Image (cartoon, rainbow over all chains, first blue to last red; front, side, top):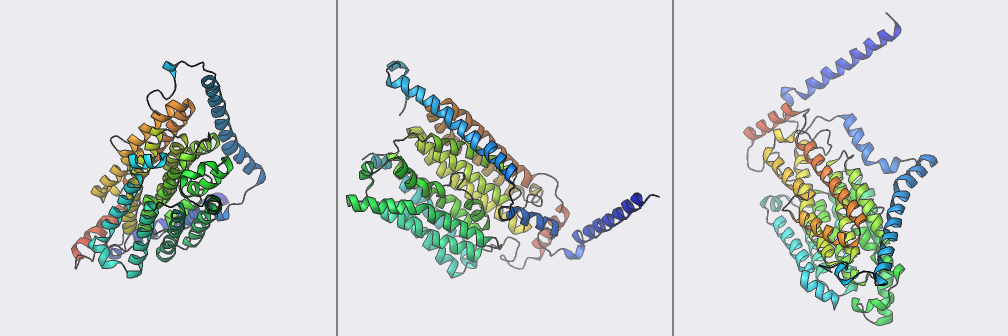
Length: 110
Length: 383
């Protein structure tokens, strides 16, 4: 047997032992008065990691700049730019009197 | 005069006052709450409700500002005193300093205006305003609502607060910002397309963040950011329908969001976890409770005939008159908000439970071994 297969078998043995221990504890008939779910340190670590992600965040310059521009600045700027252009065009048409009274905006409400 | 006309038409101040009073009446007449709450907790809640009532009924802008800031104090005491995780310390700092620092410009503007015109009534503000001063004046309300990019305090404060703190924060305290914006929006003669763009895209980003949350309370908190972006958009558009939409959204969000926070507490009281990994398949254990989850999730996503639906409908009517781009992006926002509501309900109520046999036997044993009506897993621990 190769060294890798021996290690794989050892890891499987450890995993099965942990699974069996977990299932014994979770379904133990005498442990019925424990309220809620069994305390799982892995789940607790995961929740703590998610809760404190702001404090542990370490930005790298290239990816942070890419995210900042690609996700925040460029989409918001493009929305604002096109909205401004459309509203200015509308305003210039309205103020120059090219829209008839019948086709006015806010026709049915203010 | 326009402000008084709007107030008399919509009765906003009395609507929110009634909401506050009903909320406090409901809380204080629950027999379990009377039995289990210590005097300090009740005192802090009573003082918070009194301050909120005063904030919504005062006619002077200076007093409105004073009560607006004073409502921070009992909220922070609630979070620090009765929150149950160490993360409540940074959460209270974020909550306090975001609100305090953003409202300083408003204080200076009020003082400057009062010293020049010897009055704090809003009718005289028109001569004083230009675009930058208007933006500085509404900054505190935008942070309170909150607008995206100034929203960091909200998930922290909502998650770390006890259940009553979260409910009051979601139902009423966020609406302080909306009410303040409603008071000054008569002076909005500027086309704030930048702020509208930030609100639209910010709402969409909040919905996407909701879809990757692993904490139930955190998802509900981020959903508040998405809904409040609708409120800000409606106020900025200065259109009757969008104003009505904002007001309806504030009322409906206050009901839905606080209800969802309470339901998340009911799960937490049984599972002792807010994680989506652990709160699964609850419909097998608590079918009637999951009915309420379903109802509130549907109300939150704007299913007819909920108030949220009418709010979104009025918003689209106003948005159609303004610009098609706003309609398109708002439609995406509505769709994504439905997505996270369905995600919230399906993740908590359905799916495969890891602990279903243990929880069933725990519930059954609790039922048979109960000595008195207060000795059960449903005890309210004012958390």
